[in-house]
Amino acid sequence: WTRNSARLTFASYGERGTMSVAAAGDETAGDRGLDSLFEKHGERVRVLLQALSGDGHAVGEGTPYDEIWALRFVLSHPEDAEAARNAAETLRWRAENKDMLAAAARGERLKRFESIEPLVVAQYHGETSTGAPLYIIRAGISNTMALTNTHTHEQMVEFMMYRKELGFLLCDAITRKTNKLTKLVTVNDLSHVSLLAGTDKRFTAVLGAVSKLSETLYPQLLDRAVLINAPYIFGAIWSIIKGLMSAKTRAKVAVCGSSDTRKGDIGKCPFAKLINLETVPSFLGGGCRCAGGCVRGVSNEQTVMVGMSNPEDGLTPATIAARD
Image (cartoon, rainbow, N blue to C red):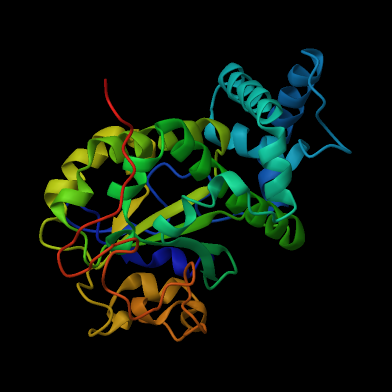
């Protein structure tokens, strides 16, 4: 974020007053230039890479795990031992999931995710005013019930971590091009969210697992999680979901005051001042109307849940294993 934009505020859910654009405790608030960050943290980055190399990990110049990659761990963990522990765990996870990560790097859609993708209306689309990517989620029309009825916990977590890797690749590329540490912003459109769908224990368990993994494997990746078009039942849903997040992640969650960006003026939301509105889908008050829909090929005008066999009676197709 630029210094000027950092003066803007979001409403913080559950708190009175305002919250600055940089989340509380953000180590990079104010200046994200790599030169200044390395001037301040360069010695710790060197120590981290030395420790990892000494343990037999292939890191450093000429590998994907160089000083820019290591910087994110140093920024997230004030203690060297903690940074080294999390970085080593990340390298082990990446080795275990190398085929999936290689597919992400090639921009390849994996066959095992083909049955998940139509039920999760989410995609990287648009950018902030500083060029950071947006990950837009249409929670209200994503079919989490059908998703959890037809896929295992492990399958859903793997899919979401694959999506995290796509975001990391985008941010890493922009960071290296601009010489500024780039983080992504998620925008969760809560229009049409129901209490039933929003509190599915199986799906909230998936979200909790993904949040925990992401904090370890992708430090300094999430800038802000913006919740927009929050319904009146949001308080009940949030009380369940927030318990699955760490304090650090919860501090990054912000709620935009706009209740319906289809009808209201998105310009009244501070979030709008931080993004390139021309790149944002029309259902969020932006100017983008992609042919066939901006997110996962779902029409910008759609208001019913995807994967419904009969939108009028709300029945959803599901394959449930037979029981003895």
